[in-house]
Length: 245
Image (cartoon, rainbow, N blue to C red):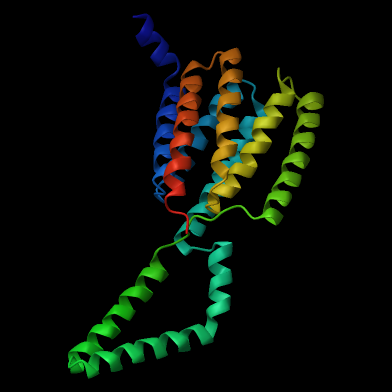
């Protein structure tokens, strides 16, 4: 009876915790459906954090709504820094070199007696390669020094702004820690949207610090969620590292 009453009183938070776990699982798998699931999770936790007076975290969920839509677009289009740079380097020259390479393959196969069949096979291989490159989407990349410095500056800026706002304008019980996890989460989510491998390290910090804070506030389903987040973040480090070019 007590359990059923507790579930009925906290069903929104429990639902958000379940969708959050699904979100991280999809993130580890690099499945693009993590973004629509993230939209649902963020909408739920806007209500949860508002009632618990975690105002910075509530604002963070609004940011998640926006970045989920942007990340969904980036992952589909594959607009990563490394991919854009590679495309610029190749350009028309790259296309010409690829054509020459395919032509040479056709000629060699023709000499070996493959004839028209060999030329058709080479062209078919080239078509498949082009199709794969165009449809694979955003790939995992490592954090560049310049990007890391910029992200560090962004974190410091948001931390102090949020700390001042929470201290002066709200009744947040832990303004400094609320500002810390919110600012770090902003940076980590942007890095996730760009598929930067090192974002997992930030999530490990955010998840375990958040779990401690939510214990203080009595958000026990969310505590369990963030502990699972923390464990799954280590799994994400391992899985994403396998796909780094």
